[in-house]
Length: 404
Image 1 (tube, helix red, strand yellow):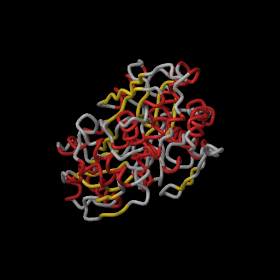
Image 2 (cartoon, rainbow, N blue to C red):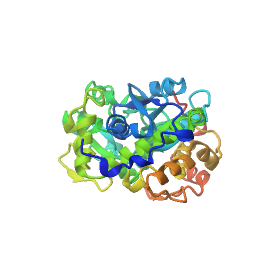
Image 3 (cartoon, rainbow, N blue to C red):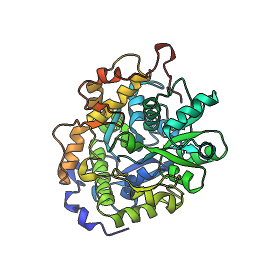
Image 4 (cartoon, rainbow, N blue to C red):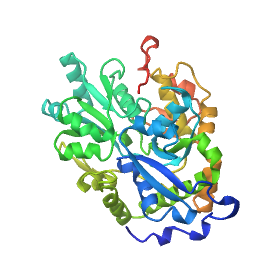
């Protein structure tokens, strides 16, 4: 890895007195995904030790398993799906458990891929997909990674924007991200939405092609977060702050320059982390995309981990957006206290302490706005109205129930 002394000020380390971490060894869960990079860098490249922490990385094989280990205390904190944290907090797939988001881990970088047989059938555009489904009659099967997760929401949003009802017109299944290419190869699914490097690997192995990226749906959208239970933050507040600072520094290091991104891609490709070819990780990590249809481009909104604090800020509006989609798709039967729930989950005061100590600008207003690809503008001001504004949504009698 490149020398990181320019990005770290060891004088900021809080390792003595009342600011010392109450728990010095933190078990940190992660999935084999490119966007776990900041946790891997923080744990292995010396970013945690100045804060009195040792980060023990624990690779997980599924989001459901990660959730279960987080809730039972086997994991202290984890690389988490934004919507997964909210789903647990709201009790959408079990007993409600109060959760916490310490910071954002990344923006962008996910992909919707279709199978090689669909490419051979000429289904290489959204319009062709719609026509193929009408002519074929039967339902295609799409995979996502967790019922309340980001990939389920990106897939639902993209399908609905093209007139395909995700609860009625297709079958959806849950598949761990690292198994997506295997399922595609075996013909068990017709497409999937997942994070890198699995979309690129499907292209490299000629098992499919990338039809859309998540940043095409929402440029600089929220993606993974550093999640934990609220009980962990309340029992170990200094540990939670120190962990946030270590991961913030690692995030800033990765995004500092292209060489840091390259060295990070090499690190995470190892067998103990992603266990995937560097050729499937590095290009999209750097924003270089090939779709498997002969088109290559430099993405204006690549996977990013820091972006001057834009990617790490735990924006309240980002969390509220996922609740609007839960409402839209029948996962929530009533409108929740959107802002109240977000304020409860997002540890804004702790994040501000960490950011201020590291010289990172923290916006005073924790809301942001964006225009999604279908023209809808999201700014968090009227979540109930926004949730009701879509022509395609869950019918009351067919509301989706999450499992696992």
